[in-house]
Length: 157
Image: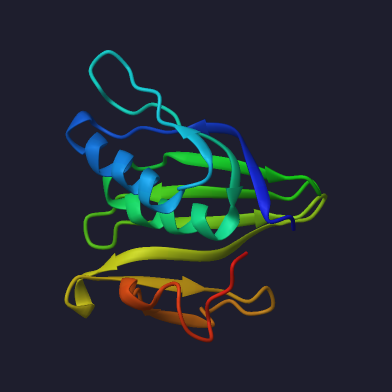
């Protein structure tokens, strides 16, 4: 799948009281991308427009804004090879989070990873990842912002 993506459709909503947090996350995680968060008259964010974004930056931004996005909001992103990545927000009371689904051209839709607030781990945000041949998570660990762009697990795209 290409490193660069373009958003093609969405049903996205962030209430007015959280728009500042979402705008700040966009600036932090998408420093070189062309993006905007259109708002309605009440100041609610009703869409996300992104072009020229590196996939790893988009994943980080979506995970960061997940707590403030309305349940069921989604973004679909397409790469130049026809693969589609869809991010869906879940605002369940105990485990709010965001799930990422991948559909390679002509293939099935697969849940590939998620980020969630975990109250059983002292309220940490945890990240889970799947392997296509396994039903259970292959990775589930707390997110550590201080080391997210350093170390052996970090790649640029």
